[in-house]
Length: 176
Ligand code: S3P
Image 1 (cartoon, rainbow, N blue to C red):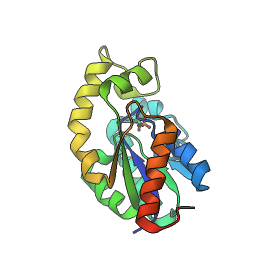
Image 2 (cartoon, protein in one colour):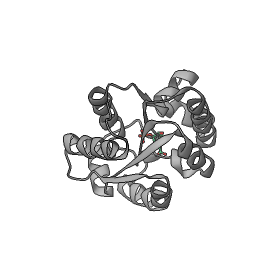
Image 3 (cartoon, rainbow, N blue to C red):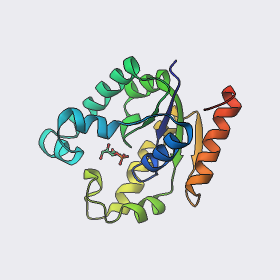
Protein backbone atom coordinates (compact mmCIF):
# COMPACT_ATOMS: atom_id res chain seq x y z
CA UNK A 1 0.00 0.00 0.00
CA UNK A 2 1.11 3.53 -0.81
CA UNK A 3 1.80 6.12 1.86
CA UNK A 4 -0.33 8.98 0.56
CA UNK A 5 -2.62 11.09 2.71
CA UNK A 6 -6.04 11.13 1.06
CA UNK A 7 -8.77 13.67 1.81
CA UNK A 8 -12.34 12.73 0.95
CA UNK A 9 -15.65 14.41 1.66
CA UNK A 10 -18.51 16.31 0.13
CA UNK A 11 -18.04 19.44 -1.97
CA UNK A 12 -17.29 22.34 0.35
CA UNK A 13 -16.05 20.16 3.21
CA UNK A 14 -12.62 21.84 2.99
CA UNK A 15 -10.53 19.13 1.29
CA UNK A 16 -8.59 21.57 -0.87
CA UNK A 17 -8.07 24.15 1.90
CA UNK A 18 -7.01 21.50 4.41
CA UNK A 19 -4.84 19.81 1.79
CA UNK A 20 -2.93 23.00 0.98
CA UNK A 21 -2.29 23.74 4.67
CA UNK A 22 -1.27 20.14 5.30
CA UNK A 23 1.06 20.27 2.35
CA UNK A 24 2.93 23.22 3.94
CA UNK A 25 2.88 21.65 7.40
CA UNK A 26 4.23 18.27 6.24
CA UNK A 27 6.28 19.48 3.28
CA UNK A 28 4.52 17.10 0.95
CA UNK A 29 3.18 18.01 -2.46
CA UNK A 30 -0.53 17.98 -3.05
CA UNK A 31 -2.58 16.63 -5.92
CA UNK A 32 -6.22 17.54 -6.45
CA UNK A 33 -8.05 15.00 -8.64
CA UNK A 34 -10.31 17.69 -10.15
CA UNK A 35 -7.28 19.81 -11.10
CA UNK A 36 -5.47 16.73 -12.40
CA UNK A 37 -8.42 15.94 -14.68
CA UNK A 38 -8.82 19.57 -15.76
CA UNK A 39 -5.14 19.73 -16.74
CA UNK A 40 -5.37 16.51 -18.71
CA UNK A 41 -8.60 17.44 -20.47
CA UNK A 42 -7.77 21.13 -20.87
CA UNK A 43 -11.31 21.87 -19.72
CA UNK A 44 -12.87 22.85 -16.41
CA UNK A 45 -15.00 20.32 -14.54
CA UNK A 46 -18.10 22.35 -15.51
CA UNK A 47 -17.11 22.18 -19.18
CA UNK A 48 -16.56 18.41 -18.94
CA UNK A 49 -20.01 17.91 -17.37
CA UNK A 50 -21.52 20.17 -20.01
CA UNK A 51 -19.84 18.74 -23.09
CA UNK A 52 -19.22 15.10 -22.17
CA UNK A 53 -21.60 14.43 -19.29
CA UNK A 54 -21.18 13.19 -15.73
CA UNK A 55 -20.58 9.55 -16.71
CA UNK A 56 -17.52 10.56 -18.76
CA UNK A 57 -16.21 12.61 -15.83
CA UNK A 58 -16.61 9.59 -13.50
CA UNK A 59 -14.60 7.50 -15.93
CA UNK A 60 -11.87 10.14 -15.89
CA UNK A 61 -11.79 9.96 -12.08
CA UNK A 62 -11.15 6.22 -12.22
CA UNK A 63 -8.38 6.71 -14.81
CA UNK A 64 -6.87 9.37 -12.59
CA UNK A 65 -6.77 7.00 -9.59
CA UNK A 66 -5.24 4.24 -11.69
CA UNK A 67 -2.47 6.56 -12.74
CA UNK A 68 -1.92 7.92 -9.24
CA UNK A 69 -1.46 4.37 -7.95
CA UNK A 70 1.33 3.90 -10.46
CA UNK A 71 3.03 7.24 -9.99
CA UNK A 72 2.23 8.82 -6.66
CA UNK A 73 3.56 8.17 -3.17
CA UNK A 74 4.09 10.21 0.01
CA UNK A 75 1.84 12.96 -1.27
CA UNK A 76 -1.44 14.55 -0.26
CA UNK A 77 -4.36 13.74 -2.53
CA UNK A 78 -7.59 15.72 -2.39
CA UNK A 79 -10.49 13.87 -4.05
CA UNK A 80 -13.46 15.20 -5.98
CA UNK A 81 -16.53 14.86 -3.74
CA UNK A 82 -18.22 12.15 -5.80
CA UNK A 83 -15.17 10.00 -6.46
CA UNK A 84 -15.64 7.46 -3.61
CA UNK A 85 -19.15 6.58 -4.81
CA UNK A 86 -17.92 4.12 -7.44
CA UNK A 87 -17.03 0.77 -5.98
CA UNK A 88 -14.04 0.43 -8.27
CA UNK A 89 -12.71 3.74 -6.98
CA UNK A 90 -13.10 2.63 -3.37
CA UNK A 91 -11.03 -0.45 -4.14
CA UNK A 92 -8.34 1.70 -5.75
CA UNK A 93 -8.35 4.13 -2.82
CA UNK A 94 -7.62 1.34 -0.38
CA UNK A 95 -4.28 0.83 -2.16
CA UNK A 96 -3.43 4.50 -2.46
CA UNK A 97 -3.02 5.56 1.15
CA UNK A 98 -4.66 6.57 4.39
CA UNK A 99 -8.10 8.11 3.89
CA UNK A 100 -9.38 10.99 6.04
CA UNK A 101 -13.08 11.76 5.68
CA UNK A 102 -13.80 15.45 6.29
CA UNK A 103 -17.40 15.23 7.43
CA UNK A 104 -19.47 18.41 7.26
CA UNK A 105 -23.17 19.04 7.87
CA UNK A 106 -25.49 19.97 4.96
CA UNK A 107 -26.05 23.42 6.50
CA UNK A 108 -22.32 24.18 6.69
CA UNK A 109 -21.81 22.98 3.13
CA UNK A 110 -24.73 25.07 1.91
CA UNK A 111 -23.42 28.23 3.59
CA UNK A 112 -20.02 27.74 1.99
CA UNK A 113 -21.31 26.95 -1.50
CA UNK A 114 -24.53 28.91 -1.90
CA UNK A 115 -22.95 31.42 -4.27
CA UNK A 116 -20.57 28.97 -5.97
CA UNK A 117 -21.05 28.43 -9.69
CA UNK A 118 -18.28 25.90 -10.32
CA UNK A 119 -20.09 22.78 -9.00
CA UNK A 120 -22.42 21.58 -11.77
CA UNK A 121 -24.35 19.26 -9.43
CA UNK A 122 -25.39 22.19 -7.22
CA UNK A 123 -26.70 24.47 -9.98
CA UNK A 124 -30.31 23.54 -9.13
CA UNK A 125 -33.35 25.37 -7.72
CA UNK A 126 -32.93 24.04 -4.21
CA UNK A 127 -29.23 23.39 -3.56
CA UNK A 128 -29.72 22.65 0.16
CA UNK A 129 -32.14 19.85 -0.68
CA UNK A 130 -29.72 18.55 -3.30
CA UNK A 131 -26.87 18.61 -0.77
CA UNK A 132 -28.97 16.65 1.75
CA UNK A 133 -30.00 14.07 -0.86
CA UNK A 134 -26.51 13.54 -2.26
CA UNK A 135 -24.90 13.47 1.18
CA UNK A 136 -27.33 10.85 2.41
CA UNK A 137 -26.75 8.74 -0.69
CA UNK A 138 -22.96 9.04 -0.31
CA UNK A 139 -22.46 8.76 3.43
CA UNK A 140 -21.93 4.97 3.38
CA UNK A 141 -19.34 5.25 0.61
CA UNK A 142 -17.41 7.89 2.53
CA UNK A 143 -17.54 5.84 5.72
CA UNK A 144 -16.44 2.61 4.05
CA UNK A 145 -13.36 4.31 2.60
CA UNK A 146 -12.42 6.22 5.71
CA UNK A 147 -9.55 5.23 7.98
CA UNK A 148 -10.32 8.32 10.05
CA UNK A 149 -13.49 10.43 10.21
CA UNK A 150 -13.02 14.09 11.14
CA UNK A 151 -16.08 16.18 11.98
CA UNK A 152 -15.14 19.51 10.43
CA UNK A 153 -18.31 21.51 11.17
CA UNK A 154 -17.37 24.30 13.57
CA UNK A 155 -13.69 23.36 13.69
CA UNK A 156 -10.79 25.55 12.60
CA UNK A 157 -8.27 24.49 9.98
CA UNK A 158 -5.60 24.35 12.70
CA UNK A 159 -7.69 21.91 14.73
CA UNK A 160 -8.31 19.72 11.70
CA UNK A 161 -4.62 19.67 10.73
CA UNK A 162 -3.68 18.87 14.32
CA UNK A 163 -6.02 15.88 14.33
CA UNK A 164 -4.61 14.57 11.06
CA UNK A 165 -1.02 15.04 12.23
CA UNK A 166 -1.87 13.39 15.54
CA UNK A 167 -3.29 10.38 13.76
CA UNK A 168 -0.28 10.03 11.48
CA UNK A 169 2.16 10.33 14.37
CA UNK A 170 0.27 7.69 16.35
CA UNK A 171 0.22 5.41 13.36
CA UNK A 172 3.78 5.54 12.21
CA UNK A 173 6.12 7.71 14.27
CA UNK A 174 7.22 11.04 12.81
CA UNK A 175 5.08 12.45 10.00
CA UNK A 176 7.59 14.92 8.56
C1 S3P B 1 -18.34 16.60 -7.41
C2 S3P B 1 -17.43 17.32 -6.64
C3 S3P B 1 -16.47 18.25 -7.23
C4 S3P B 1 -16.17 17.86 -8.67
C5 S3P B 1 -17.44 17.73 -9.47
C6 S3P B 1 -18.38 16.68 -8.89
C7 S3P B 1 -19.31 15.71 -6.72
O1 S3P B 1 -15.27 18.27 -6.48
O2 S3P B 1 -15.45 16.66 -8.71
O3 S3P B 1 -18.08 18.98 -9.49
O4 S3P B 1 -19.90 14.84 -7.38
O5 S3P B 1 -19.46 15.86 -5.49
P1 S3P B 1 -15.11 19.01 -5.05
O6 S3P B 1 -15.60 18.05 -3.99
O7 S3P B 1 -13.64 19.23 -4.94
O8 S3P B 1 -15.89 20.25 -5.10
